[in-house]
Image 1 (cartoon, rainbow, N blue to C red):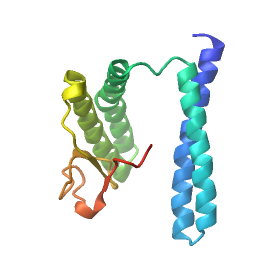
Image 2 (cartoon, rainbow, N blue to C red; image 1 turned 30 degrees about the vertical axis):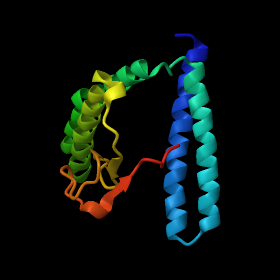
Image 3 (tube, rainbow, N blue to C red; image 1 turned 180 degrees about the horizontal axis):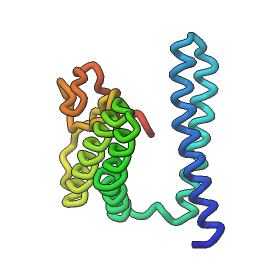
Image 4 (cartoon, helix red, strand yellow; image 1 turned 90 degrees about the vertical axis):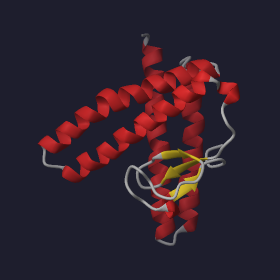
Length: 167
């Protein structure tokens, strides 16, 4: 891999992390009654997304939908078969039971994501039209509304319809 490719991927990672961090900061500002600060954090987060997408595109890591589904499936499969199981073991070994438990939730959700990608890969044009709902506690993703999260047990109020959240 060339130094430019390495730099593009490092920049992508940094910009992606900044986006998520700024969105988390915006939630705190909202809770503290500082809506203008929250708006600033969200604006910066949107800019970081633009940067991250450009870096990923320039690195050649955005393909057609079939290629993107394959890459997504590979990433999710790695996470639930290797990455999170190891992280769970390490957290348990260090006595971080609550972190290990949450990693367990995430591990289960990553497998759900992999299965959703497999389903999409099998027949992308025939995928049933539905909205996806995500549990705000653990990230469980469900086709259609959900009364109770099967992963963390959160109720229906914890689910958000993601149809227009990330455009």
